[in-house]
Amino acid sequence: KMLKHRHFGKVRAHRHTSYAGLFFVLILTGVLLMGYSISVEAADPAVNPQSGSLGLTGRVLGPPPTQPATIVVPQNGTRTTSSPITVSGTCPDGTFVSLSRNGVYGGTAECQDKAYSMLADLFFGQNILVLSVYDALGQYGPNSTPVTIFFAPPVLDLPGNPSAGRQMFLQMNATVVAGNPNENISRTVTIVGGVGPYAINWDWGDDDSTLMSKDSDGAVTATHKYDRPGTYKVVVRVTDSLGNSAYIEFVTVVNGPVESFGTTKGNGSSSVPGTLLAVWPLLLLALLMTIFFWLGERRELKKLKRKHLLVGY
Image (cartoon, rainbow, N blue to C red):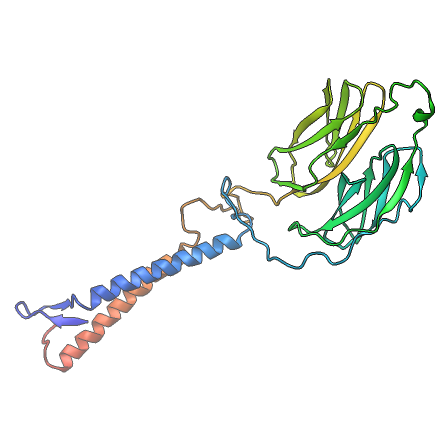
């Protein structure tokens, strides 16, 4: 809004309208521009998330699995002289299945295309196999129908054999562990029984393995880095000094990759932390505001001339 100065006769901006309006428009536009830049940044997978930043993801709680997994192989009442065996069957898609034999955790597998398959070590004598099914949120569904099999290795028939009564098996936490690419992921198994020293081979499921040794039984921990995200089947095999072996199979989940914030885009440009991604709206805003204020000034001058308050301007 333009007014004529009462002493000098010159047109000037009214301090209670023009400058206050300009300040309000600048603040509002700045907020809108920042919101636009953030939305552009968030939509670009090469930009978000930032390297070294903390990301939060959420999952909506859904119903737990309602269908149990089934054990198709081995059949109930099977007798075997070898261990480990392959346990396979059907399961609800997108879940994990956890095996127990005689109430002791025996391994975890991912359900893919409504089927699973895993290696399972057996105890001497009777083994009651039961599968638990759960989703990625840790919600459990109904257990499978138990299957009973019998394991009688030939070595038990040899009198005086030092391995008799010294069966070796592995224990560990049944939870599925998750981590990020290129970060150390630790897993721990506990050796029970057998005769030391032990050779421990970790097959990480990505064409890489780790070989370790241990003088006595007990807990052993290994760490591994995965290059890319995915769900990996890890198999641990332990062999004692008598040649007896024990196995356990489980799942490790590697999350999506965390890339650098300054990733180069396909057009050769790159984003820099702390700067607005969209600069052209700011330039357009400055140009439009200049034009609008100039037009407003012309409009007020015409009003003053029509009212004969301004002559010769």
